[in-house]
Image (cartoon, rainbow, N blue to C red; front, side, top):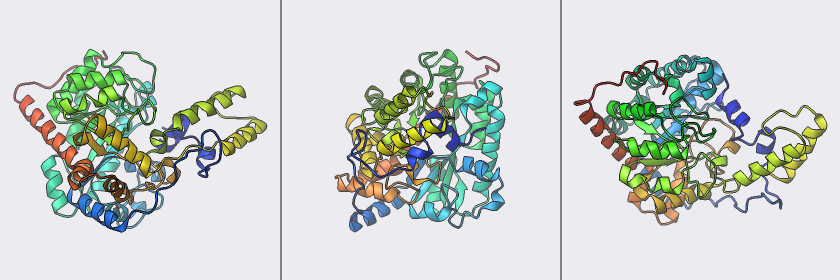
Amino acid sequence: MLSRRSFLEQTGLVAGSVALAHSVFTNSAFASDAVAPPAAEPKLLARAKALLEQAPLIDTHNDLPSMFLDVAAGDLTKFDLSQVQPTLCADLPRLREGRVGVQYWSVYVESATQRKHVSLHESLREFDVALRFIAGNAGLEQARTADDIDRIHRAGRIACLLGVEGGHMIENSPAALRIFHALGARYMTLTHWDNIDWADSATDRPEHYGLTELGKRVVKEMNRLGMFADISHVSPDTMRDTISVSRAPVIFSHSSALAVNAHPRNVPDDVLRMMPANGGVVHVNFINDFIAPQAQAWSASRDAALRERHVRPGGDIADKALAADMDAWDKTNPVPRATIRDVADHIDHIRKVAGVDHIGIGADFYDVKPAAMADGLADVTRYPYLFAELLQRGYSDDDVMKIAGRNHLRAMRQMEKVAAELQKTEAPLITEGVAK
C-alpha cells in the first residue's frame, strides 16, 4: 500500500521532490507574484489566539494515523506525543501552540486497494492505530457528539473524532458503514482519487455522472446514522447529487474554491451557492497545490514539457540526460507558492458566494515537509496566523469564531437532530453484495 506522501507525489498533487525543493521565485512565466506576508501584528495575533481558544478551533482533516503506519508500522511506543515529534505532522505541544481544540483524524486508505478487495481490511488498521493513540494520551479524548466536544474542550483536553477518507473502504457494505460509525467515524468522504461503484470522483473519468441509486441510499443511511456525507474529492455532479439527496448538512472536510484555484478537487461556485439551503460547511485546505492560483497552469506546462521529451507525465525518467533537462526546467520554472494571503483569498471567495456561516478549516496536514503546505502554514502551530490575517481584513470576532469551529458545531447539531428523528421511523439499510 502506498504511503500518503508517495500517493500524492505519484498522482501529481505534489509537484515532485525536485520541484518542491525550489521555493525561490524567478522571472519565469509561472513565478508567483505573491510574497510571504509580513509578520502578524502582535495585537491581532493575540486576539486571534484568544478567539480560537474560545471557539473552539476545529480542524476536520489531519493524516497523523497514516503517518504512524508509514513511519513506524503502527508501533506507538516509538513516539511520546507529549513531546514535539519532528517526524510526525502533529503532537500535543504543537497542537496546543496552534490552539487546536478539536481534531478529526483521517482514516485513509488509497483508493486503488478497492481493486484487490483489501480496502476494508486496511481501513481497520487505520482505525486501530487512531483509537490506540487517542486512548493512550491523557491530553486527548474521543468525542462522538457536539456535546462531547463542548465537554472535552471545557475540560482542557483536545477532542478527537474520526473521518473515513473514501467510500471504497466500506466495500459496498452498509454494515461496514455502521461499524465505522460505532468506532467513532463522524464523516465519510464519498470517494477518494478514483471512482467507486456508486459515486464519481473529481479526479477520475465520469462513469456514473454523480451518485447511483445505491449511492443515494448510502447518503441517506449516513443521515440516519448521524454521520456527515463529506464531498471533498468527489466530482461536481456527485457534489450536487449529494446535497440534493441529503436530509442533513453535508461538509467538505478539506477543499477550497475552484474560482481561485482551478484544481478539480476544489468547489465550483454553483455548488457553493447550494450550501446555505443545505446548512453545510466548506472546510478550507492548506495544501499548496490546491491553494496557489497558478498551480494548475504550472502543472499543465510541466506535463507539456514532459510530453515534448516523449515522457509520460507522472512516469519515471530513466534517461539521465532527460532527467537533467527536466531538472533545469524545474529550476527555471519553480512551482508556484501559496501564502497565508492566498488561503485567506479562498475564504474571502467562499464568504462572498456561500456566506460566512458555511466556512470552516480542514488543513489536511499529512507530511513534515513545509513545501507541501502554503507558506506560513507549514505545521499545526500556525492556525492563529491565518486568523490574524482574517482579522486584518476586517472579519469580526464572531466571524472568526464561526469559521474556527462554531459553523461546524452548528452543522453537527443539525446532523444529529436529523439522525435522531430518522432513527424513529427508518430501518437500517440492508443491501449486502449490491454494487449498483
